[in-house]
Length: 75
Image (cartoon, rainbow, N blue to C red; front, side):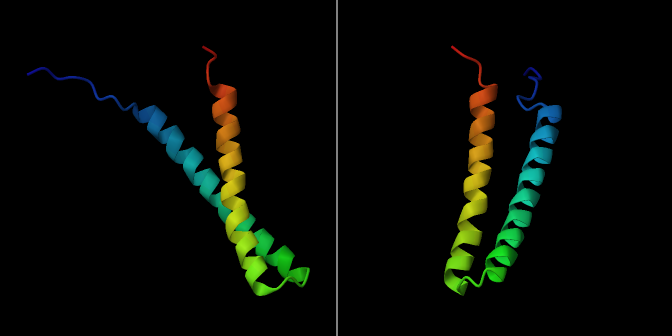
């Protein structure tokens, strides 16, 4: 049996973990910011919660999508 190398590069996993952690913190900060700003604008509880829960994942998806489109090599 041969010792084949692992297909996972530890350096890439570390960078991906850091990027994921930064996006998670960004999402939490965006949620709290929206919650406070919409509360100050006297928005009702349900729309305030709905917007605060739906906007951060959409923004994160846009960031990840833009990164993939920019970094993807042209074929």
